[in-house]
Length: 214
Image (cartoon, rainbow, N blue to C red):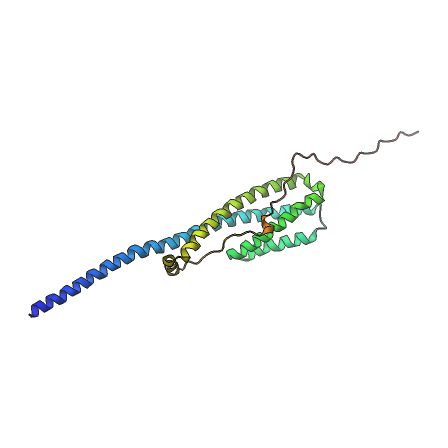
């Protein structure tokens, strides 16, 4: 009887051990992929933002030369030059994605205003340095748009996972939080005006013909 009782106890213990091992295996089989997915989605969003940030900083590198060129023709437009300098400073002073998105959108609107000055100062449009800088800026804007789209796609995947019933659990365990979308403002969506390279440069005023001495 005693041996029978011990065998029963050992049988129960063995069953519990097997049950714990099986449940632990099932838990790890579910937990590890879920946890890793949260980490992977966050990493993809971080890498996508790094690409956006690189293109935005490339644009900021072009701005001082562009402003200097425009100032040579429109020096009295001090308000926009000051605001551009302030927006550029804001971008570098913040490390948050939300802050840099806000500064970038502000800069986009200001750049559109800056480039529109060529309509008020036609001689600026024929300046070779201005034309070269605008071509470089337009190429950078296209790269920003592509990088922004990829970033938003990565963020939507991440944010969707963090809101799901199961995904939110793993996101909390991994310390992963939603990220802001890069949404542009109406001012930032305004396309930079293009230079018409087919337009001939302005014709210099005719010089009076020299008069012959009597």
